[in-house]
Length: 113
Image (cartoon, rainbow, N blue to C red; front, side, top):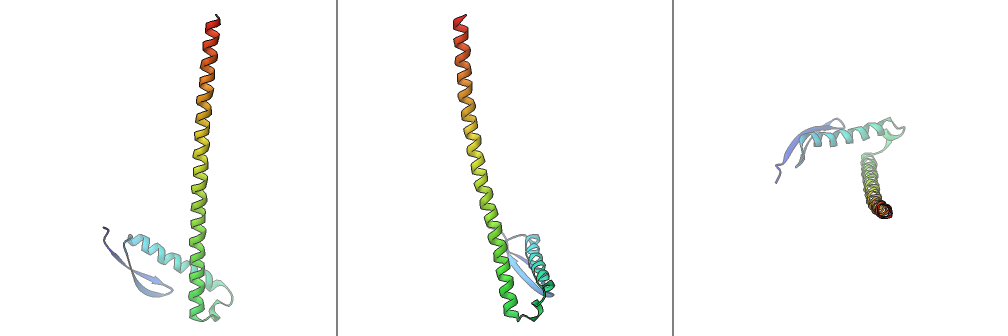
């Protein structure tokens, strides 16, 4: 079992301690991603007028959106990989069949000589 890691991070200008079984670098990446999202929002007109609850909901929605888009991309890559593996299998099968026919043709030609 991995050991638990505690990391101090700054999110939206406040210090937090994040705990998890991942590396400290990974936990810092998470904090950076959240800070990047908040920075994006702060650039948008009207964001500063939203109450804190709405800001948190907006952040949660966007993080969930990132997650599901990444998951869909991973699923698409898995499907593409499976399709390519099937295509390779089919090509190998075709190659074996062609080699058999070539051998048969060569043997027929030798027997005719």
